[in-house]
Image (cartoon, rainbow, N blue to C red; front, side, top):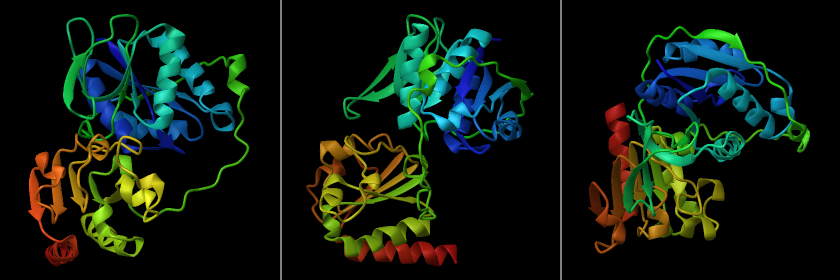
Amino acid sequence: MAEVLVYVDHVDGAVRKPTLELLTLARRVGEPVAVVLGAGAGQAAGTLGEHGAVRVLTSEAAEYGDYLVVPKVDALQAAVSSVSPVAVLVSSSAEGKEIAARLALRIGSGLITDAVDVEAGEQGPVVTQSVFAASFTTKSRVSRGVPVITVKPNSAPVEPVAGAGAVEELSVSFSAQASGTKVVSRTPRESSGRPELTEAAIVVSGGRGVNGAENFGLIEALADALGGAVGASRAAVDAGWYPHAHQVGQTGKTVSPQLYIASGISGAIQHRAGMQTSKTIVAINKDEEAPIFELVDYGVVGDLFNVVPQLTEEINTRKG
């Protein structure tokens, strides 16, 4: 059976959820072969095998941590040469898309970014995308070379399936460009205790209607009750009410959670572009004519200062 390369996103061997979703998609096309690079690569093999990886190619060279993305591109290029896969799947993070673009250029192949589904086709993998601010859904395939595909988080379920998970050392020769940009320092990001915004299954966002940074505690309380992440509209971020790292939209982050709750957000096209592929959308807005109500699954016309605390209280009561 044909093999599919899956680039593994991990932290010291702890595999991140989007990679496990990629393994689910890879099994629809062929047999997943995971590529794990950097410190702790060998520790990831067990998790990857439990989610269907038939082989795990590892390389723990110091270059992956000391320099930016080029050493990782070198390694993936070596993996493509070794495996001859029918596709390469990478998570659609900022770094993932840069790695994918560089790899596609290196191997002379087509690139498809921000896929929301991948399935087998007679002439190669068929990829589904949500395009033009989520106004259209397209299906396409790469017509030249090995398809390189980046996939949005939350596009597929995590499905544990026993795989051989045989560990093999990947032989990599680093290019002259690999050491061109060196990482000189790292500062750990302060953890909020909440899920990563782009990976969260539940996102609660606040907009202009929150009416001040001091009121975002209502949004945070609801997110915490649901075990979700906190997002914000561009208007809220531009006003300085919430950090830019939490902005959802065309100029912020794109999310596709199972549940998206928009509180006090009008639903401008810029914001919709970043969340319209969410599986279930709930809006809370006192303006019944707000554009956000055009795309929601459930709408609540009301003042968020009344609705959100009651919703939070009810959720906490049921949890208790």
